[in-house]
Length: 209
Image 1 (cartoon, helix red, strand yellow):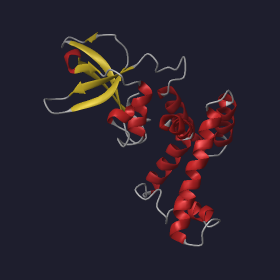
Image 2: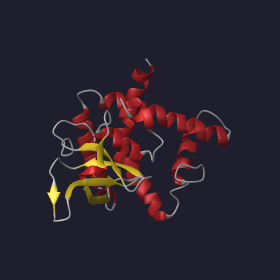
Image 3: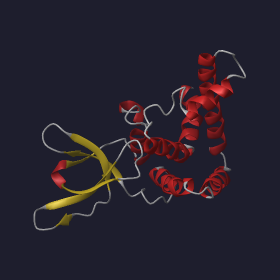
């Protein structure tokens, strides 16, 4: 029952992820990523203004606005789960792509998020989640690009992709000894995307279905 209630919210959050990531990236470039959702930031002030319709208290208004935003995301998730998803994605992409400057940031973010998702035929559907060992005490979750083995004269290697958090549009491509690469059963590419986008707050059993 809880999963059925939360599923539309998660779907809506992932649908809006390119927009949210674009805002976060702009905030980071402006120097206030840490306080991106605080009451004194532009986004926080907008949430507070929306909450003033329910309460005159500025503090309560901020949290009311945050709750209202969560409800909107949940409703969007319900709509995205229907057959209207292509129209919604096309409309959102067309609107934001026309905005000078913003569209340049938004397009690659949107493409990455959807590639990391479980859409049929996505370019990342052939990738798999693996754990890569770097020394005796460090392991990193990453993506195995393919089962192809590379050998440049120093041993057999896999090519892996390590995304960055919280905006995983960049990362590192590394050739790693095949003995140091282990599959992660039960974790899909979309689960790894959630892990990086949420900076590890969605982890462990929550990231696994």
